[in-house]
Length: 216
Length: 216
DNA sequence: TAGATTGTTAATCGATTAACAATC
DNA sequence: TAGATTGTTAATCGATTAACAATC
Image (cartoon, rainbow over all chains, first blue to last red; front, top):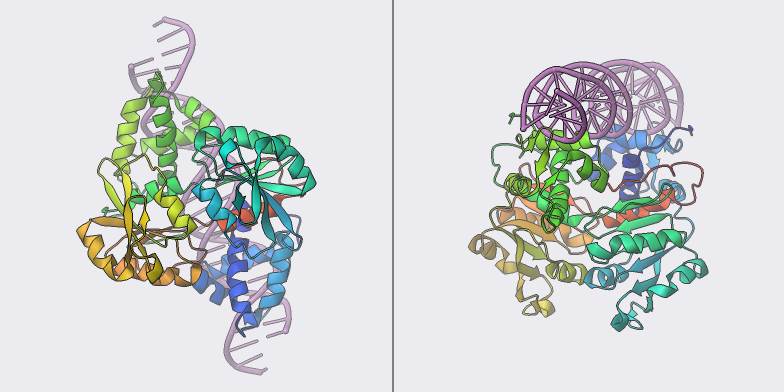
């Protein structure tokens, strides 16, 4: 509705809303209030209303939000109303796990790559593992806009650079290392090592910091 | 140094510091400044100094931080100077990937569980898959303090409840769903579906939001 | 000493929450 | 109409960054 800059935190919550709304949609519930959403998703209702209001007036006063309408709107906002093709590099355990993962939304891994010659030609979830040399061409051919990195830390920057020079503007990095990319390329870092190690901090501190949990 | 409450964001950065410091430690570099750390990790140097200063005076004015000393200190803060045992539930692709993952720090998966009878008895990275019925006992026996959830969304809350009633106070959740836990139980949610879908938002918005990248 | 860099305070920035008029 | 709930503004809260005295 307003030409305001949307914060990252807001955008990051949209898929969370979408996921629960999709769940609701498969029941016979057709309307949901920010309060109900907040209770279920452990978020402040005002925050949810504010998040959604950045993008439009999706609700009805005194009533709430229509579930399937809101789903449609959030899909549009996230650009999930059009198919989005993804390339994955690194066919280790994690890469394989992700390939088999059912994203449900319009996002699909359509090509997988590995630098290890012994992996080339293997099949992973109906995709044939390709050599890195084919990355650039395949990205164009298959209209790939997002890259996933599941290689060891030491190779991740190299892969990232390749992605960038192939024209990819969004990267999801699972390697435990900080990547540097030029402006205009967006990196999301799934750093579960850090998630796990930081969890250790809170253990046995029985006195302090035990009062709340969040899912950040 | 001061009995101040430490924010989650600060704690979450400690493993990131630790990781790069360990890298430095395997070179012959013995001292590092907040500026160098900031450049490498894409963080503001003032933030790094402030983060570390919450826990003590680890640096030397005009010099910087001694790498191996800082490593030792951060390990202590994160309680990684003592071994920490972890249980994992869900032996799908992702669970298997995590089992084979080398954490490097003192955190180790020491037991894996699955509710699917056909999985029981399988071996995963030298561990035998156990039935859920053995969870409570094994948690006590092996002094497990952290649980990892890699089951489908629909089963995650059930597993979480089991963990909690077994006395676990820290959970790393990979299932794409929000878990509710009692106060005192800490949940970190690795939600890569949301990471990926939110990435789509920024694609092709060639005009806006292209200026910076972060690794949140 | 001169240059560098910390630890820390103050200033800024941004995100969350409360409150409420509008209205279904 | 009465009750409920949105959209939005204002207040609060918290985190990041700038600046600088202390000091190696």
